[in-house]
Amino acid sequence: MKLAFLPLSAVALASATLAQDAPPSTATAAEEPSGTIIIYRRGSIAGLANACPVRYKGKEIVELGRSKAFIWKVKPGRYILENKTSSVEVSVDPGETRYVRCAMKVGIITYRADLQIADGTEYDELKSEFEEPDT
Image 1 (tube, rainbow, N blue to C red):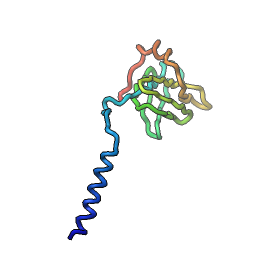
Image 2 (cartoon, rainbow, N blue to C red):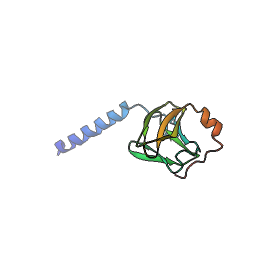
Image 3 (cartoon, rainbow, N blue to C red):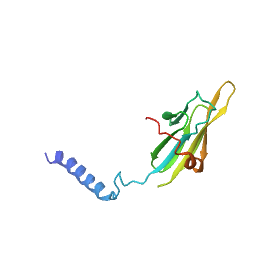
Image 4 (cartoon, helix red, strand yellow):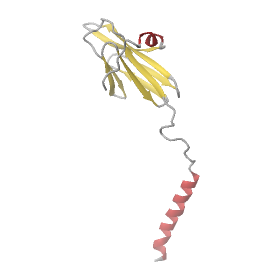
């Protein structure tokens, strides 16, 4: 009987030790710093019938039509955004806002969506024209 209780007490002692060694968590999920990636497409006539899909890790996060913008709150880190014909790498620091423009370029048969890093100046000048997509 005494041997049956020995492993249980050893497990209880080990788990108590591990809990004491873990650093205390002072930040909650709401307090965690975040960044922002704004993905936008101007309202030009070029590629009127084409959408601009944007994917992250193979999952579509938004499909932009003309004059659309998508504001994406993210954890700080490195993000590779892509579509069928292009990709961009976006690094976001805590509290930082980064901009990605979807420009329509002439392809062989039709227009293609091209993702580009932007500095935010164009977005700030045109943001009154943008509509956030229904997502």
